[in-house]
Length: 289
Image (cartoon, rainbow, N blue to C red; front, top):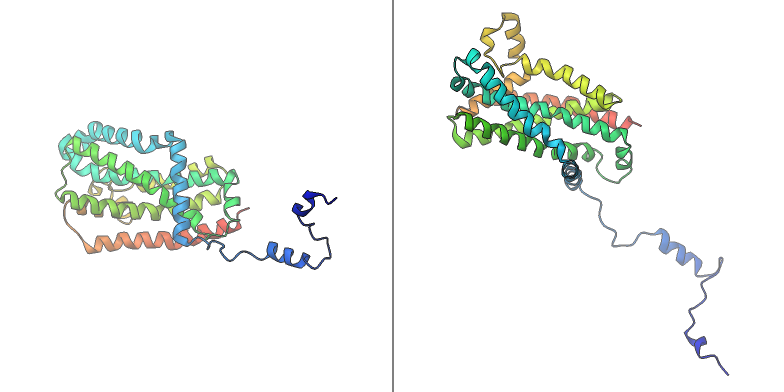
């Protein structure tokens, strides 16, 4: 009598060398037609930028440098040096807030390089470089993600300044325009610290080199005092300092005056920083093992 289960048994798989084997191999090797398209450059940048924001979510203590530190610096310089430098706290606030606004954001850009150096030391970017995406997106996305940190720090500084009596004559339009310009400059300056983070081997070394470069840029500028009170030889250095150029433009925009020459100088500084340190960063990134 015939076994009733014999008619429902699965067919025997083809043995090696059978006629069905090439067809099975072709189905494995040939990708399906509905394979997803590779991510565009913009999509890849946004994805890596979102990754940078998620790191802040899981380590919220990273926001100390963009919350407590700016407030502390603003209050210290206002009430300790305001009377000596500006004659009174009220007068000095009008001069200081645009400068401390720039100083806060450009100081934070150093942490971009430190974060990248930490990821490199952990081998994270070794895995990123194996992915079929636009190669610069891994660096550009990290820099774009830090724009949120800059935005938060700048908002805090301006809020504190308003409480201290800062009243820009350019109104909200001038403040927003100055904010946007400073974000562009901060993004451009971040490429410098990206190159530094790729050139050194440890996070401590990246911090040391960054501070060595940043301190003269910040204090040999017009952020805290009028350069006319400085020696002549120092005034010349301050005048060509990119930070002084940005501070002057920010003050003009917040005062409601728009100088095309000042805007052009800031745009030139941004372009030079990106054109020099962008390719240098990518060259070291591609060669880094």
